[in-house]
Image 1: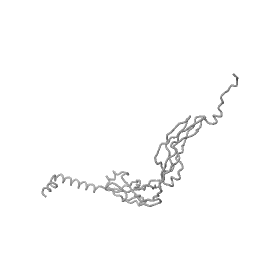
Image 2: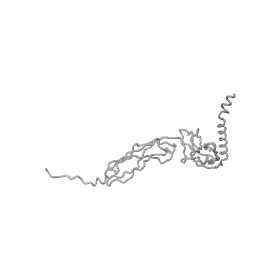
Image 3: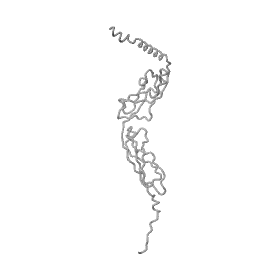
Image 4: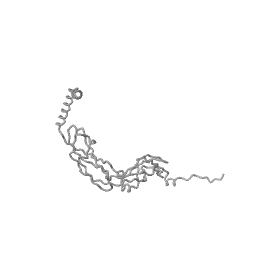
Length: 235
């Protein structure tokens, strides 16, 4: 027993006493440090979202979180360190109200959550739907004199979109970004993106879309072109 006491208590006793004293002084300094309050506006995080559901809100919900803690600690905190979390496990289609309390906000050690505004969120859910829609090309620009667009080919001709069932069902087409076909004679291809105007509907797998524009001489130009001369002289 004496050997154990000497080995774990007496051995390097001076260093151990210094370490204890330093810890006491540090704790005393921190405990006397002024405590202040700050507020952050941060996005609400949704965890455990069911795979077959979509939240139908077009705006990402924000929460204002009021914190209190040592001044040095709060000065080092960034908005990304504050995480208000709502667990959506068990959610179903329709509307539901969720509480948002201080206990649901994850913050660094030694920081206290005083208040969360709003204290409740009302969310709407719809079934997730995937659908294929046609891609509509959007071609702009001025053709060379005497030429007109004869056809436009899009590859791929359709894309898959996903989102809330009601919103996806209302989508007829996806539209490409404008393609400037000015000066095209014959044909030319352009790579661009397609988009759906509904912000809650998105592409399953975003792809570049190739738009090929074909031009030909305008009908009026062809009609006014002189016929080739022929000779009636007999050999």
